[in-house]
Amino acid sequence: MKKLALVIVLVSLISCGKDPDLIVKGHVKGLKKGTVYLEKEKDSAIIIVDSVSLNGVSEFELQSDLESPEAFYLRLDKNNSKENNTRIVFFADKGVTEINTSLKNFVTDAQITGSTQQKLYEDFLKVITRYNEKNLDLIKENFDAKKANDSAKIEASTKAMNNLTKSRYLYVVNFAVNNKDSEVAPYLALTEVYDAQIKWLDTINNALTPKVKASKYGKALDGYLAIRKAE
Image 1 (cartoon, rainbow, N blue to C red):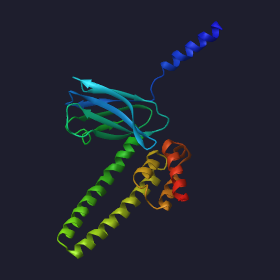
Image 2 (spheres, rainbow, N blue to C red):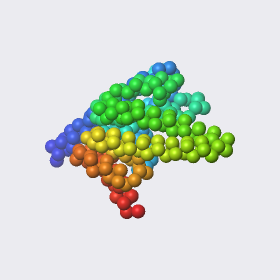
Image 3 (tube, one colour):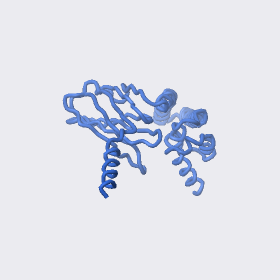
Image 4 (spheres, rainbow, N blue to C red):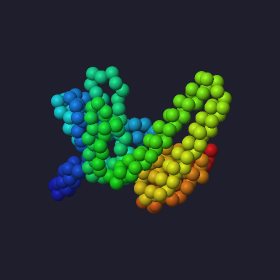
């Protein structure tokens, strides 16, 4: 019995000393006081994984368990501020992810180093941002045309928006298929083109490698498609 008790104690100590799968550390230039949260999505809700309150320092370190590469949020809650909380979206794998940014431009100044998935996600964002900016321009054109009651411009801007939407969807699908060996692919299917035609989502799902299919987002995409097909 004594030997059994000793084994149980040793196992408990080893478990408690387990290194975290993911460490997120960095620096927020100009931050004097606030709370930094590490968050992720679970069951369609955003949950807090870890947090640290900062007072007089701007460096932080957060931790999380991680079964497969996953998207996380880094959120800053600035004390005594009327501004909305701000979130940085990033893709993490096991190991260390470093995020350095500023208080003034928390999201746009973020420099992220870590996983190969994050680098790929950044490549995607560079292009999709241009699509989003163009869409905003077309929305403004359409609004101005309606305000001026200009039917020709209304029709032209509406057609341009529809064409841009189709082009954007095709870009996302092609990007996901071309990167079928990355967990970013099913993530984009679920977040960027979830309302696309089933055949486009099927194209992404069928292209995924076995490793990615077995990941969190690979399983989620498969389940989501099953629901869509049953409707």
